[in-house]
Length: 277
Image (cartoon, rainbow, N blue to C red; front, side, top):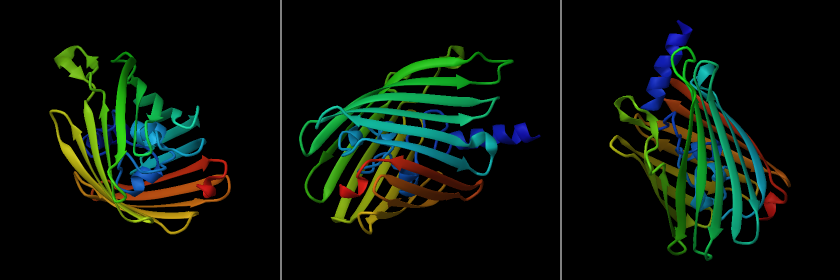
């Protein structure tokens, strides 16, 4: 009976704004602003957005965990790390794992991002997905695809970002021509003051549904950020907070699904001199 409930929740999860196969974002910073894929200085940018990764200021390593609806089989672990090769070129690694021994997804991303100017950057990532369905009926799937993203600053008030995920629509199974989804994220960020950013993102799965995400980030001080947001299908309100010390930053976020229950996420980022940015 428990396995049946997990399968039902996986199906429901797949048709919500946070799809199980190829989730658009990971980490509590993104979740806190409505699961928007690109947030300036997001420590999970190596996983979430190649354009945003181009503007990361410091090397960092982040470890995160997300509990979905208090169901063990839906918990997610994630990792992101970035290394500045030089002032304009950044190498990033992102990894996420969701599931249990019966069904699980592991997604590894290796990214390279470049800041072409003080106002424009972009990057690409090579993605390796390992998908394990029930062993008795299905073989393990090992798939390769790619992502690309850009981030640009129009002026002191507006930023724009765009991302394409799996544009090649890599085949998942020959039966019924099943393929991994082709996903696009289009983000607009309005900086009303140097400390307050209001953002909105349209997440579109090709030949399927789209979802609107909205969020706000308030930098209380160099050490403290608070966030709020919402993503639809159905509407999920979110809240997040980050606190930074000299070399460590703690992130927490919560979201509430109107039918399934709460989502909670936490992460720790190791980043030398992160309060001096």
